[in-house]
Image 1 (cartoon, rainbow, N blue to C red):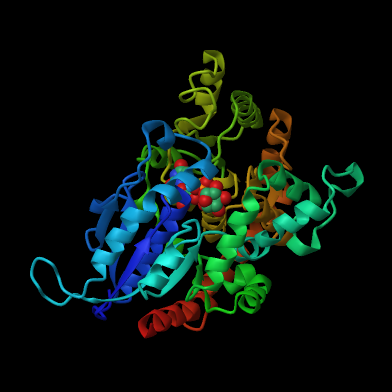
Image 2: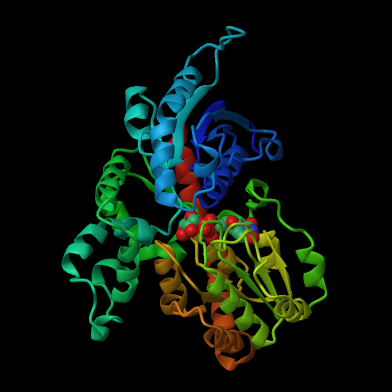
Length: 455
Ligand code: UDX
């Protein structure tokens, strides 16, 4: 770590795993460059402070009831948290900005800025009223963030439902998504989304900068377009996963028995299956995935989060005779040490929901993917994987045992899979170069450090 530069940064992650991991990674990066770190967080999904003894953690109440805490409705959660957290966050921030320590009377370290997630709706006016510069950390791919503001317009213009003949058409305003992808996104998102997007856009444009965990090598076109659109400094500091692993910010305890189990498997033989921290599936979808894995005859490591199969606790509804078959070839866990798993020599493929973190973690370890997106930005990440970088095969939403079996064989055993493996190795190397001295991510990070220091 560099010597302290005398500046403090306040971070305020949105309390979902997919948002906490990148924020804690950013905290580690800034700390390694000499900044002191204060993380303000909700009681709900609080990061484990003991894993980060060098940061200061401040908890605020979130007012969520026990039932609200376990809801699978992300939109409801965003609304409730924004409603409940504004006032406690204001109190906490105002106190932090007092120049003197209330106990010792000593002068406090200067606070350079607040960095929060684009899911918080009240932070921009509050930071402005307190004259505190605010930067936004966005956890999507740049392309998705830039283009998703066009969704209300597409809803008006696309004349949904689609004709069969136009399903595969590329949507030029949201390249490389196809019309069928847009209709899947809009199927879930109602008009209630529109004012929310308008607010995010306005608040982003008013901010002092926008940070992405991506790099020119993954997102070049969108990055230059985003710089024109938003007219604020934009930093694409790279998928820093291999330099600052996210495991320490895991909200669930990873099942470490995965690693000795993988040690017993052959090189590149295992298919790893995980659908991230938010996606839920039906019982029948779980059965199709389980049968597909079993019939493929490849060893597999399957993550089933507690509560992720709707209407059940965990995997108790899988009949015993099928469990026996599954246990012969595979291992099922509640949460995996994902980055260590993807790094393991035994892993040959990743059946993923294509959350942005999972997608870049897979690229960084050169693990080819089978794409099974369910919602929101996952559709775009999956199109990049299958159609642009060509480092995976898209299941096109078919959660069916035969499809899954065939796709696993294509990826793990056939020449198509070999070609994909070669391409993802090249992509990994290209992304890796962005961290070298003159690489894009490294330069962008330096620009971010200079920018924060100058605020
Ligand atoms: C959510 C949205 O689903 C996604 O579309 C958006 O891009 C970010 O927010 P999430 O479902 O959490 O993300 O997926 P992802 O972005 O892939 O993040 C999951 C994180 O949890 C990864 O860092 C992954 O390594 C970690 N993880 C996942 C584990 O450590 N263990 C697991 O078993 C599963």
